[in-house]
Length: 428
Image (cartoon, rainbow, N blue to C red; front, top):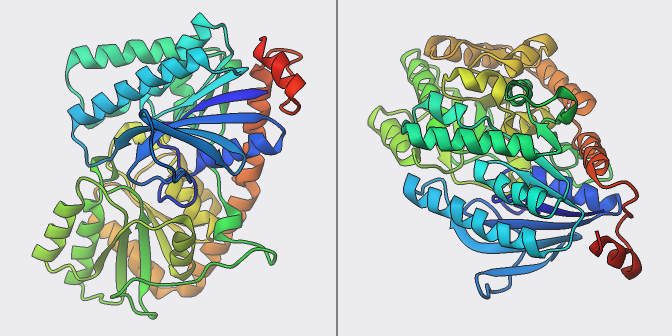
């Protein structure tokens, strides 16, 4: 099977963002399939290619994956107009690739929602099987967040969402709420699979055969401090003012042995840093993004992972955040500040703390409780790691993903291999 895979923000572990597509593509290759990954340039990503761009792109093989990287830079710091232009440009160029490349199955993953456009085109103009992965529900999320208010834009996004869902032969949702949201648009449940983000146990908690992470702490965090970490984008959706609110409460209570470490970049980071300085919140430490190896070392030294989002009801069951799965893979208890499927799982598995949204006192109380009872905290960490291994091992979820794509392929399509087999696939 030859898979044409579209992910605008694709990265290898050398980057500082999620590696779901990298791991899924690698698993396809391990199962004997050919994968061509089409992506853009992300400020937090690293595709593994280092050649110069020619005619707007570059290509090569990384870990068995054929990568086509388009010279379309993207950053979360970009304004709305620039981001929209980048999304549409990537979709337009991806359409050209979907119409000229030889492949058996086309797969596209959001965000953005425009990532599905080349799949829709391939489905109807080339009659190719199309599998669409939904990581966030659009336009529901931007509507609830108030990020997009123009009714024409929301209407157009709704049309694209409906068309993408209805065009796809199969769909993948990353959380219970996403699966339900797809079904509400009239898609038969048997066409939808829930395959959440997974835990990279070989990175964050390797066996004796793997290389153990090298623990480290940022400057300003003592070995005796309780270190709670947040690793991700500092944007509107993340609601990181909640962390600073809790830090202010801890300062009022004179709890100086608790440090809150925020690792990452984003449009709101300068504002957060300015607020922390203005209010004298020296218990908050900001750090630049790091690659997966350094991140694993940070988590090996951390005591708690903070799963923080803005209080938006669409987030409760409609997200599958990478950082949560990284935390539990590293055996970190999780402090979660909004209701939903993750909060329910944390409480059921006794692997952290679930506090109400917009409640700085409850957030601070949980941090103080963690600092006061390290024995209980260690038990929560063991529970977190057990949850990661039993339910969210990336390798098992990747095998489910591969099987789902294989079922979408035309009957009798051969696996990747000899040139003769390639020729037969190209006739399809």
